[in-house]
Length: 68
Image (cartoon, rainbow, N blue to C red):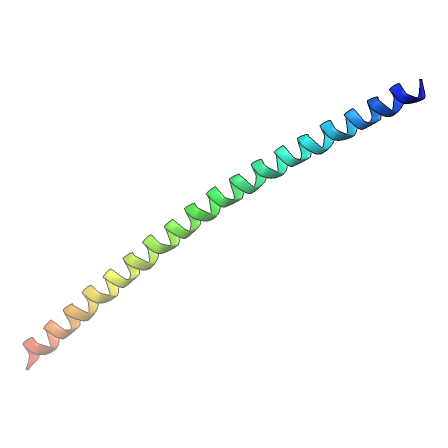
């Protein structure tokens, strides 16, 4: 009886640990996916800002040359 109880306890423990590990892997995977999305979005925004600043600088330079 004691052996069966111990085997059952060990099985329940291992199942719990396995489930927790699976859940942890899922959470990490989801976090990595979201992080990659955020990085991609930030890079796009930075690129857009750079392009806008470059365009404004070119416009300002052209206006300055036109005034001269």
